[in-house]
Length: 238
Image (cartoon, rainbow, N blue to C red; front, side):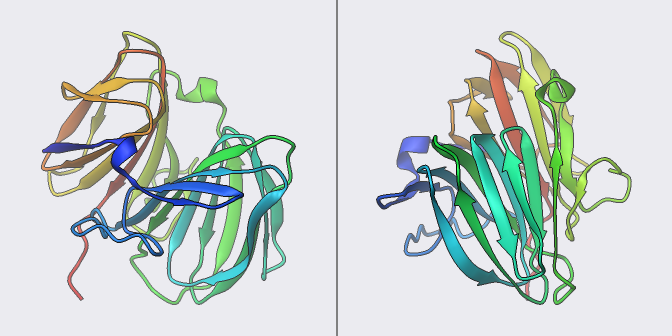
């Protein structure tokens, strides 16, 4: 099953410095039946105005992946970490037992990013943060693992969940395939740019494609596209 979730129907938060679209229930936005997708809990599509951002605030027991599409985001946290993550880069914060951080756009232009939250497999682990560059050419015509909880994905940023966050760039007319380990996995795919089909279903720029019960997906670019995919297990009952 593949369900298209149109961008213009997503929840949103709009204030003077932030315009966020929410693929799942978040903050004051509540959408029945969209609290998570497998262990994927949050996918926010944020546009942050220049010299603005999120002041220090706490998190715990969440894997938070930031995929920067344009501009840059600057991070500081209570562990003493700081860094600037540019377009094409990815950062991961494992909140664990608790961490306080801030995220600011110190640039002179807007920053656009995806912020993706995945529930960890093990709670109350030591918090950590890291960032890495993933050049677009390395993702050309294939899915590249950006963050992963699997030891075999040695080039990816580590996360504490049996999940993967992947990126790909696909030229117009090109087709790529992704194989899930089993049909019990949950996939969620968003084209940051471009229009694609996923197993024949058209997905427009910044739409979501909620995928379940599939052993593989075939992604065809109707125009040159930049794609992000999350592959997670089912959410266990408490």
